[in-house]
Amino acid sequence: MRTTPANNMDVKRLNRSNTLRCLLRCDKISQPELAQKLKLSWPTVLQNVKELTALGLVQEVGAYESTGGRKAKAYAPVRDAKLAVGLDITQNHVGLVLVDLSGEILRYTRKKRVFSLQEDYLASLGNLLTDFLEGGEGEKLLGIGVSLPGILDEAGERLLYSHALDIYDVETKRFSQNLPYPCIFLNDANAAGMAELWNNPETENLIYLSLSNTVGGAIINGGKIYTGNTLRAGEFGHMTLVPNGRPCYCGKVGCLDAYLSAKVLSSHADGNLAQFFERLRDHDKTATEVWTEYLQYLAVAINNLSMSFDCDVIAGGYVGAFLDKFGGPLREMLAQRNTFEHSGSYLKECSFKLEASAVGAALLQVEQFLQEL
Image 1 (tube, rainbow, N blue to C red):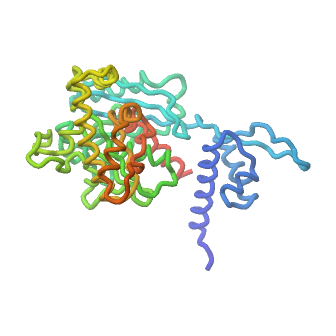
Image 2: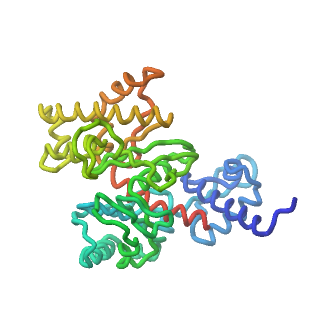
Image 3: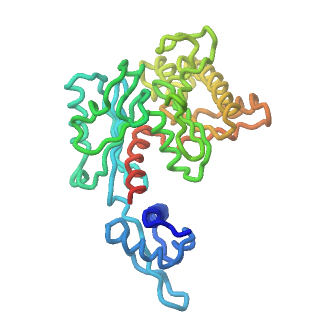
């Protein structure tokens, strides 16, 4: 059956996009190697490289040593040809990251800002962006990904509700009214999950557990974020961990958030999470007892996720960034709870230990650019 012109254009766009994706994972590569990796014909790759070079996204960087024939030209991606900003809005802070086309973090900052829907707060977002961008970066900017702690509608046009920010049914364009670039909005935990998916492009199924000042998560199924029937999938923070347990900010009791929020730890160190782990490193008795209890609850939560979804689990967020140094006992706790084998190997370290939600939000702009290339 003949392919329609529209489909031909779609295939051409997909091949061009995949060519750039492959190049972005290499320091340099020859066209024959590129054709082999992509399983495309040499003329197709040649045309794609030519078009990407004309767009300023690829550059020739010399040639490989000859093995008897003509020297093969070497090509490399121009990773900073386009940039994207991730903006993470939380109850008390605003995080900003700048990433290039490969997803590398070029710069980040985090500023204390108590959230408000008042005009002065919204204006401050524009000021923070202006101060954050340097030189001609604005001219390369694809846009801004904005990460919000709450449930958004499918189009990302309304923040339906956010317990963390204490706001309900707000148009997301309110947040971008002082941001002079295209903006995309998404849930903070889903954004962090997207960042992990970007770093693991072959992953089909994955659970991301975000352990920040609120607890959330993302479900990656078939290589995509699963949002559920009512866009609430991954709200792990409000699963019941301890019946009739501690009060949660959502108004219920016993929620996972009440036991695994980063605030559970930072409250023992004057609100400073890094200081808590400094005390833990110094074998402070209180910090050690609090951390041991925290890990016990975390092991229950992670094991439940593993039993429910039967795939790898990444623990990220503020606390997740410290697990590689302080989470040693956790794997053994998981192994003891594992019904099917004595192993906690399904727990994986997070790739992004700083501003994961902001990174994921920025990468949504990069992904959109690559898909439309």
